[in-house]
Image (cartoon, rainbow, N blue to C red; front, side, top):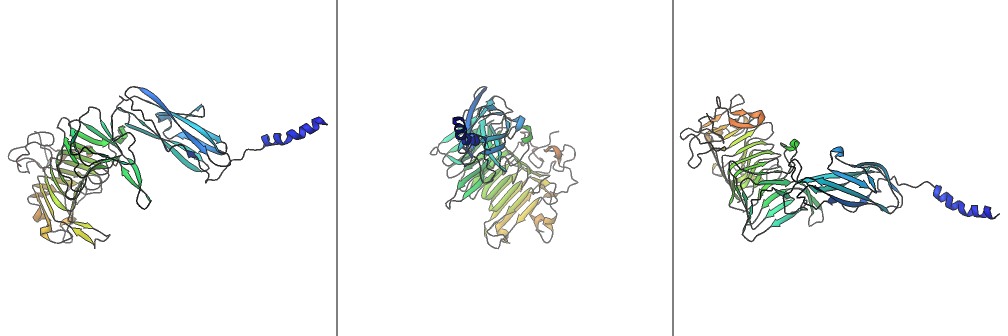
Length: 491
């Protein structure tokens, strides 16, 4: 009898252990994490590894099953995972009890002298649960560099101030801009041979109405008294580019936002510089001033050089593979381009756009205008489309739309029709209005925009310009009949 009673007492406990565990299957029941980004805050100066961890939380009243947990890059990942004591980068059917948690340890091994390693190593840990896909970012630093403004600047803007002084970047180690760098009271001088890598991403901020706004971060902006001086040389140019160094990113546009010289900033000077693989190359805002010499801007997802009611002087510059316009001049301004080549092949945008108005609505019924004064001397404005120049004169007043092209090679067709700007040839004298059958460059398919040595129509078409005796490569130009564009033929 006692055994029977004892068995009855144990029966509920036995049944409780045998009862099937209840799991939630509702997509509304998601995981929560101790962080959305796991930072490996070590900057490695020698071969080494680091381990960090985060926690997964189940804040629900039922157990939750993680169908899959894995590293996004799979076998190519630079990270390793350990989940509650199990070392694996690809796990299935992990269970977390109600109101319980689980540890995820991640480690990374970095060789900071490996130049094939990215400066910023990022990867997602992916969680698939109840039809949901959630991610935690792993973020480490792959090379020893100067991280500006800090290693945790992504998604936000940080100012650099020095009360009117000068900051010089001349370290042999590269500079990595991580986030948005705003320079408001400094002259930033960048020495020859310096490499500046910009880590572009998606930033966000909450506006005054409490709404989250998103924008592309990864750019350098100059405001107020901020000034940029680039002192590159022929043999050691300064290079601005994205921080992805793998070969598949060599010609990938849009990796970072670009250089932004904001309204009213003056004294910017850029010499022997390369700006590439950005959204825009350089944007110069209202009343800002830039002198641009011996500079290449290419592989941009939008326009290469943008002037908005600005003042820009450019000599010996090369623009190509710009998805928008090679040169885009809006809302008037003062512009002087000499010995520049704009090659717009394989993209939808033209080589040049010029306008004197800023539209305030979709039909430009409302607009603001400023005088355009633009001068092009000894330039090549060419590409694969039949029209490489777009003009936008909203005022129909010649005094407010003053442009001249001299000794230039251009490609236009519809532009000079009666419905366009039939007086364009009056503003382009002397010019060669060439077509796709004319030979100009050495090898367009390989982005070699040196002049064809035997047949280029740019040969001996320019006129000498005092003070610009050398071409982009440093070759001496002919003293009486130089070549048009940024390169001189070398026989």
